[in-house]
Image (cartoon, rainbow, N blue to C red; front, side, top):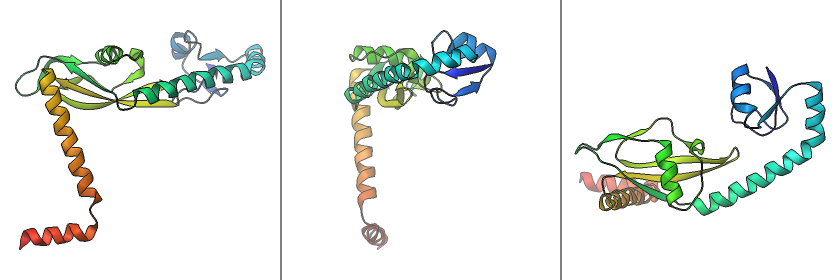
Length: 185
């Protein structure tokens, strides 16, 4: 089925593009979400007559998403779960759990905006992408731990590791080789 996109969609096209998609994808997702129109002569004329309106709406939504992304910069959320001594969770942390934790932090995002490939099944610190608009993405740090105290320890440990890595990469090459020679002697 050929459709006209009303907004930018990843791996599909830009606003105004005419693309071919499977019938079910168009009927079940794109049309109900008002992201596309069926390609007909009437719809082509309609789209061209309302193109400026669609672009204005898209620009407004993008500006709102960019503002929210600025507010969310550096956001870190903690999710407390029961886990075995090995760090394996008794269950998993899904996009819905992350969405709820972000909502508790005071930001409104939808579950479909949280992009994870699969649920987290171990404790630790993870960076999760939040797609606020097709052109705006923000990263949120998610800490999964058994308690608040343990979450603080994980954050401190990760911060120290990042600082050590930055210090290591900021040394000039000459100092690195001298240090290696000094340790051998």
